[in-house]
Structures are given as C-alpha cells and as structure tokens.
Length: 261
View (cartoon, rainbow, N blue to C red):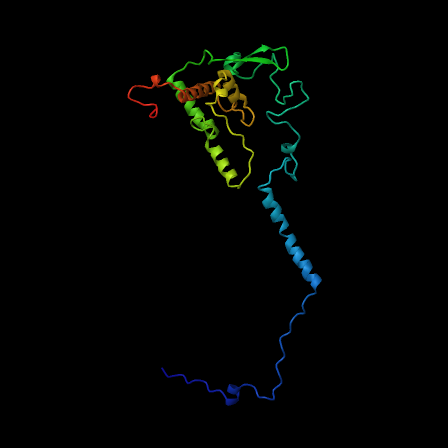
C-alpha cells in the first residue's frame, strides 16, 4: 500500500493572518439583567421550596384538629369516638348502653356474668351500678388446655403492649421509648399496665374481662375480635402470670429451682 504524503501548507498559513488584517469582532453578549429582575427570580425560586417544607413539617407535626381535606366525606364529619365524653346524656358517655328489652341478633347473651363479667345491681338508676364477678364463671373450668389457649391468645393480642411476662414492656412500648429517647418522634404514649401491680392483683376476674371486652383509657376494645371463651382464657392466664411472680417455693416441682422455673 503506498504511503500518504503529508499535506504541505503555504508559509503564510503557518504564520497566521497578516499584521495589517482587521481585528476579529468579539462574540455578542446579552446585557446583564437589572437588579429587580434578579431579585424577583430569586424570591420566586425560594417560594417554590415552601410547599416541600410544609409537607415535610406535616409528616412530623402533632395537631389537635384534623387535617384539611379537599374532598369532604363522611370520614371528617363531626362525631364522637369510643370512650369519649358527651354531656348531652346524664351519664356523660358517648357510647350508649344497650336498651333493655331489645331482642338480640344472633346468639342470645342471657348470662351477664359470662358474657359481660358483671351483673347490674340497680338497673333503674343512672349511672347503673354493677357487681363484677369475683371469680371465673361456672362455665369456665380451669384446665391445662384453657391456660394454653389463654397464653396463645395473650401472645397474639396482649403481648405487643404488655410483654410476654405482663410487665408492660412489650415491643410497641420499647419501640416508642427508643424513638422518644432519640428525639426522632415525640408520641403521647400511655405506659401499659403491669399485671403484677397490687392494683391489678386486687381487681376481680370480671373487671379484667370487662377491660378486655370494652377497653379502658388508651387500650382499645377487643370484644369484637376475641370470642367470649377466649377472653376468659386470657383472664385465667393473666392470673397465672400474677401467681408466677409470687409463687412460694413449695409449689415448684422437685428437681427444679425457682430460677429455673
């Protein structure tokens, strides 16, 4: 293949343009905008950040009133929630009790001690006085199967707040405590009750059953989630937890120590 010879340029092209050539015209530049136009542009850019700042603040801010919703529906109408106070009624309760003499739909709950954990002692007065059952109803028999069922239901519904041992230090409490300790999120959290406290030890079985059924303070109602027989099984298991914390050494089987138990 023949070699390609390099291109030979004239001498005047190597030396550049002649000295008497006219100077090249500079590239045209736009004039600098006035200060008021620059200020308006900067202010406009800053204003575009405000919606992002408001959205970020709303994710962590606590408000006493519900947020404004453009499409209004039944979810934002004025209403009373469970466990709220309503001074329209004499007993100041927003949750109204059942009307005497009504016919139940489905299973007839004719035994108040079994289905409610109490009996009314003065039904003609308001608020109604009740007598909580001091022990398990006669339909509930203490067996190993009952305690196992109570433990199983307890670990599903109660463990997350009260802990496996009933000390009130469940995973939800630990998580919220960690967040509050690191100042990541400030939540109003009510410490769950400790079952080994003297106050709860003195409560009757009917009171514990009624708390599971209707809830109390920050604790929600589990009456629609846990059947009646399972609620009594949980009550029996709670009593077992309370007894295990102060059980005498004489009840521990031979060959085991209290620590091993």
